[in-house]
Length: 516
Figure 1: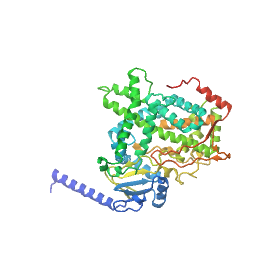
Figure 2: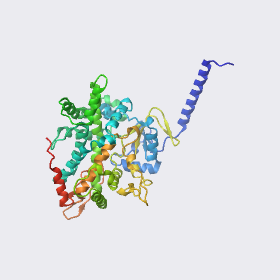
Figure 3: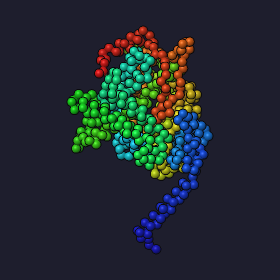
C-alpha cells in the first residue's frame, strides 16, 4: 500500500499526540516536592512563616523536607529552593523556563512598578533594558567612572569625622549620591535634597510592596477592582510617588542636556544614543530610559546601604578581622593617602572581607521570586508545576555547613586559597540572583562596597559604644524581614586611627566645594 503525503501527516500527528499524552500522563504521576501539610482551600497557609521567622522556618523545612520544598497557599503554588545546586539547575541552566516574575498585582499593576527591571515580566522589553545595562554598567564601563565613586566615598569618610553618630544617614547619603552621579550626573546637595528624599521614600516603599505573602490582592487579583478595598487609598499615594521618582532626576538630566551643561552619565549617554537612531528620539524612548534609570537606583541603593551597615556590625563583633584588614592596607597602600579602586588587586584580604559581608548577612535573603512558564518541569524525579513561583533561599545557601565551615562566624579567610585551605564557594555567584534575573549592576555594587570598606578601615577604628559602666553595647543582629534586609540602626564608636589619619581626612576635604 502506498502512503500519501496526507496519510503520513495524519500518522505523524497521531503519534505526536500519543507521545504528548504519554509525557503528560507520566508527569501527572510524578510527585510534587515534599512540603508542609496542605488543607483544602487554604493549602499550607497555616504553616507558612510569619514576618519574623522566614529564615528560621525555611532552614527548618530544608532539614525536614530537603533541598526543594513545595507549598500551596490560597491556590498559589510555591517552590522553595534551599540549595545552590537546585537553584543553579533551575534558575541558571534552565533560565529560559524560569525567567518570569510572579504577577505582583500590588507592586506592578496597582502601584506602578511593572516597568521596573526587577519586577517586569520577562520578554522583549526586559531583554532590551538588560542590554542597556550590560553596555553601560559592565566592569569596563564602571571603571571609567571610578573617580565619581572615589569622590563620593571620600565625602562619606569626611562626614564620619564631623558626625560619627550619624553613620546610617551618612551611608544612605553616600550610596544615593554615588548612584545619582553615575546614573544622572546629578550632585546630591549637602543638607536636605528633595530628589534624594523622594528616592529614599520610594525605595523603602518598593521593599514593602514586593515582599511575598504581604498582600491578599496578590493571591486574589479580583480584589483590585473593589473600590472600597482598604489598600486603595495608599495605592494612589504610592503611584504618585513612583512616577515622581521616575521623572524628577531624569528631567534634571534632560534639562541640563538641553542647555549643554550636563555631566557624562548613563542617562545622558542613553539619550544621545536614542537621538542617533533612525527617526530620532521618541517619547517612548524617553519613558523607557527613565524607567531604566529608576531601575538602577531602585536596585542599587538599599542593597549597598545594607552591606555597608553590615560591615560596621562585623567590625564591632570581630575586631581581629578589622586589625588584619588594616594591616594589609598599611602594607600595600601606606599612610599618606586614601586607598583607590586601582589598589583593589593588591588587597586580597579586603576583597575577602567584602565577600564575607555579603555572605554573613545577605542583603536580599530570598531575592525576588521567579515564576515557571506555562508548562510543568521535572527536577530529580519531582514535578515542578507550571506557573508556580520559586523562592531561592539565599539565606539558607549562605548558611550551608557543607559549603561553609562554621557558617555563623564572620571569617573572610574562608575565601582565600592557601596551601592548607581551598577557598570556599564564592558567594558572589548567587548573592546577586540567578540567570536572566541576575542583577546587572554587580560591578557598581561591588566597587561601591569595596571602596567604602577600604577607605573607612584606612583611617578609622570601629569599636562598640560603651554604656555608663564602661561595658560595650553589642548591637542586635536581628535584620528586617523585607525584600531588602537591613539591620536596625545601632550605635558604635568611630574614631580616627591616629593623628596622621585625622590629618589625612581633613586634607581630603580641601578643594571639595559644598554642594548647593
